[in-house]
Length: 327
Ligand SMILES: [Zn+2]
View 1: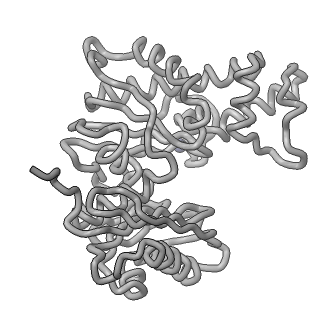
View 2 (view 1 turned 90 degrees about the vertical axis):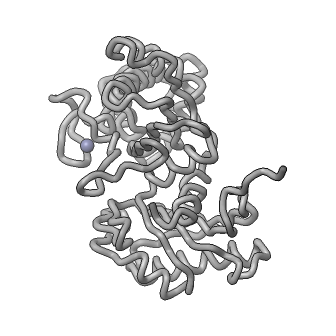
């Protein structure tokens, strides 16, 4: 007996990020057969960005050798809350977008059905169907990078919520009078444990004269500290780096416990660029912190694991979302 196929036809999945567009053609088993990349170039305006999205999708399609007639649908994750019924992206400060009819505009360009959701929601869906969350009924995904995104899947479906903001786990408030978050609140998980938050605290400590090997590793004229730099300093046992990164993992563990106490998932998957670099070091601390904060048996047999799909999670999840007709 043959294995049941995941999709009835090959799908195109697209991850539209603030800086780059990544498109993938996936076969019926959800395996990527071709990919393409372009810069988002948000500063060129929305029409130009959508042109580039369509170009990227078509480039991946040509490379895949699959005829456009064979493609089932196109899914796209965008960095914005999205009305998944209409495919309108409400607000994306990074792209300078407000109420952009992504579905309508891309269908006109590609001549294929297009389904749109938030990038982190489709990333969570990708990990759920094809990555670390395979086989789980309920799952939470946390993606730690420049910021922190999240997604919640209950009984196999992504939760969008009343105002399409369900699963915004990065804005869970962990410390009520904590540091200011980009969203305007204080003490959100993102303001405590994202790469930008850790960088802010590390630079402040360096300004106060605290010794660290990071001082010699910083790029000139920039406030950016790459994940790879943090990893190097952490592995070398640099005290300041270890202190701040462990603290961020402790906060992340509190967030994991809050999620688990609230929805009781089977698995929590943690990914994102920062955690791809430092997950091996930080995941054990996240687990210990979470175990200190679970309510009663909430954490029993519950798994907290690293994501598996890396940069492909959102594009693959978008393909899954498209294969389901946008639900
Ligand atoms: Zn926030």
